[in-house]
Amino acid sequence: MLAMPSAIEDYALIGDCETAALVARDGSLDWLCLPRFDSGACFAALLGNSENGRWQISPVGKANVRRRYRPRTLILETEFETETGTVRLIDFMPLRSGNPEIVRIVRCDRGSVRMCMDLVMRFDYGRTVPWVTRQHDGALRAIAGPHLVVLRTSVPTKGKYLRTVSEFTVTAGSEATFELTYGSSHQPTPPAINVDKSLRETDEWWCKWISPCKYRGRFAEVVERSLITLKALTYEPTGGIVAAPTTSLPEEPGGQRNWDYRFCWLRDATFTLLALMHAGYYEEASRWGDWLARTVAGSPDQIQVLYGVAGERLIMEWEVPWLSGYLGASPVRIGNAAIAQVQLDIFGELGDALHHARSIEQSNRHAHFDLQVAILKHLEKIWREPDRGIWEVRGPDKHFTHSKVMAWVAFDRAVRSAERFGMKGPADQWRARRSEIHDAVCRLGFDAELGSFVQSYGSKEVDASLLLLPLVGFLPHSDPRMAGTVRQIEKKLVREGFVLRYETERVEDGLPSGEGAFLACSFWLADNYKLMGRDVEAQQLLERLLALQNDVGLLAEEYHLKNKRLVGNFPQAFSHVALINTIINLFSETGPAHRRSLPREQQPEKEPAPPKPVR
View 1 (cartoon, rainbow, N blue to C red):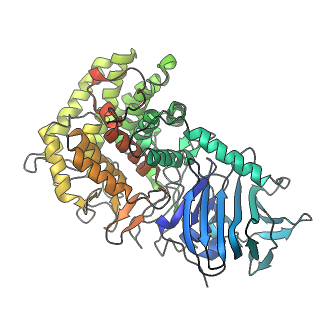
View 2 (cartoon, helix red, strand yellow; view 1 turned 180 degrees about the vertical axis):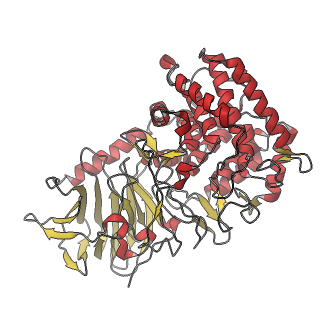
View 3 (spheres, helix red, strand yellow; view 1 turned 90 degrees about the vertical axis):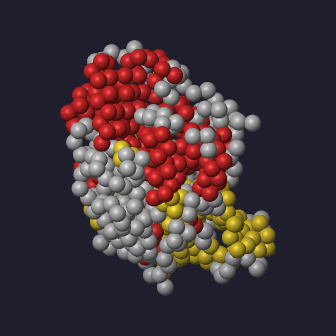
């Protein structure tokens, strides 16, 4: 019988800061791309069934399951309690010194437990069956084209129906080890590792990495877990941060809103930068800023919405016909057609991120400003044009209000850099353009009858992206127009205490209607409540959001209100970045929302001080 994937919230993440795997509560590793986040998957059961590749290690028969991450690490421990005993399955990926590796250790803590292993290797997103041979040292060697995988284990294995299986028993104090190593088929077989040493070094590495975290207020452990998740989604060789390690997990069960998120989005830039800065991770923030500048370098009219982890631009979208999709949600998409879209907001995000990065690079504040000037020259030519907006709609282009606001941000941050840091450029021209855009948005993007800003010029619909207007400093939170906008969003988009992006049944976005509540938008509403002095409501909303975390502290992109399940790609960097920022906003004297929304004359010249908890 073919095994189907688990619920999205039943997965945990392991990774080596170059790729990542998802492991279900039943011990099945159902998703892994090698050797990078955006490489082809060798375990793709998540988007089909067990025949598309998985690696399960679990007790024979029923078991009660508990799991956790080892404190301050990305080492996953799943405890199976059976009638005859208790075992722990320890899963981790060592930080790379050579080939990528997955290590799995079964340790028996009580009694004896009969275990089984089912390894189904399928390269090329579940399509290609490898040729498997046993080596003289007992290792299994699987090859298909350029791919090589080596399995070394302390238990006996056998081949069965194009899979590798094993049944074994562990008793109290004993363990079984499994080491899966990836390499190139034309290279020598990668050597074995010392499993115990690798576990110890991985534990020490993560504990050392998280130790500089400066946040010490309420929910500090939640912030640390989200920072570890964000680090796990970072491609260490370049500093790029992927939106998620998965593709095509649907935003609506059985639906078509299925996208590949294994890439780096420019619009995540400022939120990510500020989350890292306020938590004390200046090196990571600096590397992210450098990644941004390197990646967009070139002709400004060729700037894209998203890029590969090393800055690749050719990320063509195609569909995988042999995968049925997560629980039947098709199509399964590889790549992302949004690379061809015009989205004006990315210019504001880029300018904002580079401006804030200058508070880190105090000895090199002029870095990348010439690039920023060139980008503004291009933006001056196109800001009046319609675009696809922050949500990358596949419907008609519109004059999205949020897009115009972010065009304002692009000019505003250039002016601020000139005023605060002495950057050289046509500041008077930028001030004039900033004023022109501000006037246009307030005139065309605001509906006096509704008393609210609207999704696009001439529309009567609201959009959760409008919650960003005070967060980026376009208008103060005290402006009555913002109070009216928040009221309309509460009226139109809040469902069961969570925020929709927009009403998909009322907006033409090129796709069938229906999706979950977008978690980042709910965090933005909490930020607005805090700025407006509605502290109790802000904390209540935050606590509702934190209750959506799965048992190991991970969040997806969205929450499906009807089914009460996490939906969308998982874990989602944007959700965790928003979580970090909102907690710091609510429980420290100054946070990212306060910093980003300050009038330009009050902007700090230096990086933020360690957050001081509110007593």
